[in-house]
Length: 336
Image (cartoon, rainbow, N blue to C red; front, top):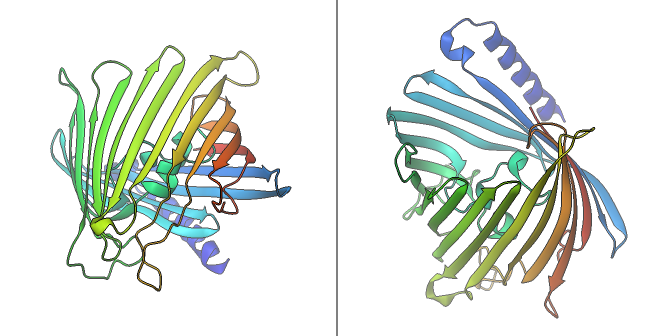
């Protein structure tokens, strides 16, 4: 608590100091935050809990015409303080970016969503268990959005040791690339690949995803394939598909969104060996059907109430983790 109090105090002092300045580059600074508070109930064990899932604060802006920056911290990520984004970015050309620091690895669609832009209270298996990586490294990217065929492309190299072991030296690195194509209005096709090496087993992942927004609908599908060198673990497949329909309201809420999702994964290993030197199943195969509604007080992804019910399907003999069971989720998300 003492560390948290000091951190919050330092943040407020930092903000107050910046507000007292008159320099133009400080005036461009954006201070944003995301709060997610939820209640969950699991019928089978008849247990429930309240949780502050995220309490994120970020500072971003432009120092000079060619230099951007971002720093983001989560004061309560499942009870822990985590430094998330911490990078500087140079744009030597209008459509070309060079980023260095700590950031989300460019891979998949759903894993790249910030908490406030998630459609569901809980992330898909692709976004949480299989393709969720944030690391320290460098990235180059191009944004060709004013062409007849718009495209965004990113390629990155990372340590591979996560956010807390940055002093380690590496004989091999992790690599990731992602290409987003926009063939016509409302459509997005994303192709991405990644190779990582948590210990001495090289893991390769390929992902393809697409979404389409039209009228009041948003439809999305994504498929990820994961393989391990020397066949140290069987290949993994994960998928995520959902549909969202927005219904405008003229009452207490601006709109209500009705959602349906089906996602799943086969047996999965993180790539970390056990004491016997073998890769083991960290997450057992399962499918999940999620239904729900999101009530928006105003503009989407700013102040939402998310109400979801998740139904899990496990193979016979599979072991369900404590929090990976049928559940009702009520979440309040505030973005400021």
